[in-house]
Length: 104
Image 1 (cartoon, helix red, strand yellow):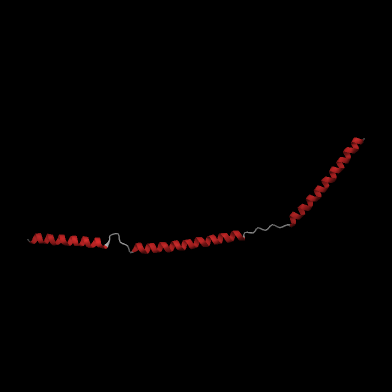
Image 2 (cartoon, rainbow, N blue to C red; image 1 turned 120 degrees about the horizontal axis):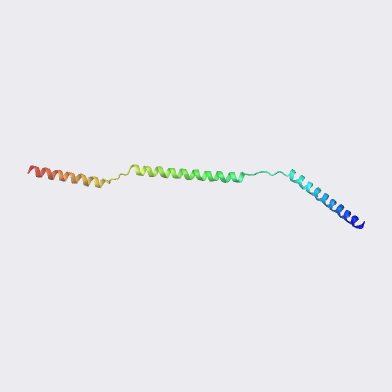
């Protein structure tokens, strides 16, 4: 009978400790339910806004540089002026030479 009493006593102790653990878990669960977790994305929003501002600034500077390059290339020529004058002088000299030879 002593073994049966010992086993029952151990069982009662285990049940009591189990009940205490369940009570502590219930308290923890109540605390978890009462705490509210808020998602704060203000820092991410600030970083994204700053990045967008930087991108906009870079885009405007690139556009200004592109417009300046287009202005410079619009007024440029592929054939320089001195070469045009030289070719004109060569044609005129050949025309005069040809007229001189024909009239002689």
